[in-house]
Length: 146
Image 1 (cartoon, rainbow, N blue to C red):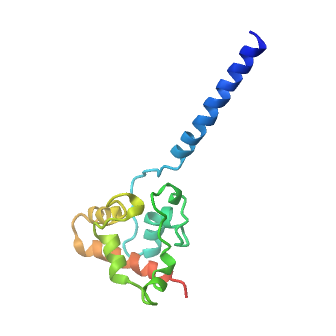
Image 2: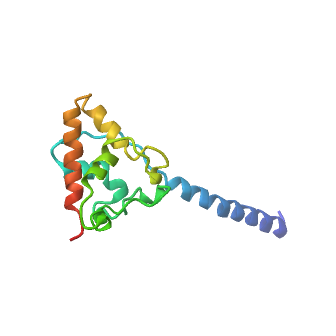
Image 3: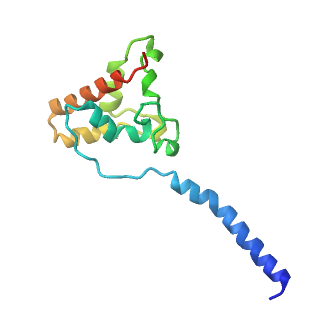
């Protein structure tokens, strides 16, 4: 093999690796789907950690490990009151979690996957599903910036 052939092979391999790097990076930014874990319906903090922190972060600022894979940035949950004139928008947050609303970061009606999944988890017992949503909302309210 001549030096010219070796250089050509080296350049070809280099170009293939350079073109493949962005594809590999894009694949790494995917959101890993895992089965939903069961949590205590009275523990808002445990539900937040299990269901919300992957995108919104443990601190609620939208910096969770799955946030880079979202189509839109995850909402900073710590400034909901600030953005609502100093009042926590409890009904709106309850609706977003518990109902089938569209959230752009998820590309469809998937953000309230939790609303659907919480209903399924409680096997149609609406009162228990509402209790889950209520306790999760109260935890998010406790995260508001002072």
